[in-house]
Amino acid sequence: MPYQPYWKSEFQNLLTSLKGQGNLVSWQEVSDKIESSDYKIWEYVYEYKLRNPAASIIIFSSIYKQDDRSRDINSDAVRIIYEWRTKSGKIYSKISKKYRVDSLFKNLKEELIKASNKSFELQQYEWTDSIKDTDAR
Image (cartoon, rainbow, N blue to C red; front, top):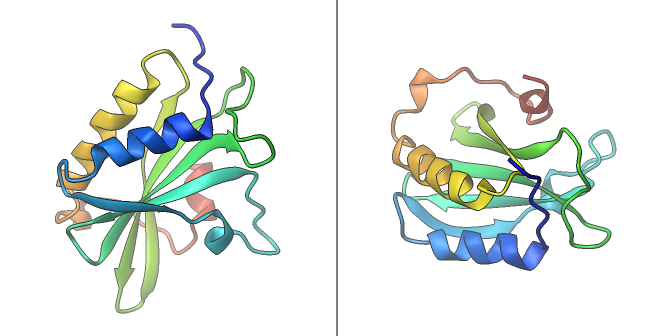
């Protein structure tokens, strides 16, 4: 499968097209909210709000903030994680990685809808207190 380059606008159009499907409600760009002095974010990061008000899906887009374009051919991927807001604070769980091949948008659409539909069954996943730890798993 060949590598699929894409622009920020194409990625955002995909996110917009998913609104209302499964339990997906609305999305926003959250790169600056996630970034900290010890956790630098080089890519655009999006949050998809869900019908479950305690959960969201976080999407690391693999699109450089410098030029609004996906990276060159490399081993990174679009990463998808849950964020669950509990009484004890936010916790995170990896959902999946989608590699940047020609079927990326189709694969991403299917995975986001599937994950949104499972957002009321969050106890089944492994959780961590740090969003950074989801990249390493």
